[in-house]
Length: 88
Image 1 (cartoon, rainbow, N blue to C red):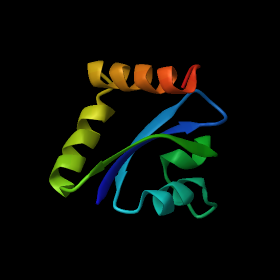
Image 2 (tube, rainbow, N blue to C red):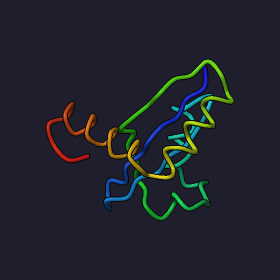
Image 3 (cartoon, rainbow, N blue to C red):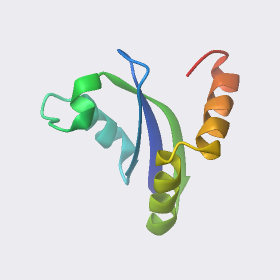
Image 4 (cartoon, rainbow, N blue to C red):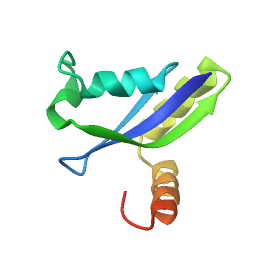
């Protein structure tokens, strides 16, 4: 399986969209001390959304769509807020 995920920083109202075959390991990496990427500045991260795909090509396409943060992003944020009863 291939996964697209949305992380939210616990320290700021910042979101990160990513892709991985092993999302748990990838999210742990984002929160680890060995992370030297952009997400290092805003850790700790929590996963607020996850989608699964059987096709890598489709998962990568979906990740790209979500990174645009257009109407698709708004729809997902509304779905998350409705499910958790608050602001994502």
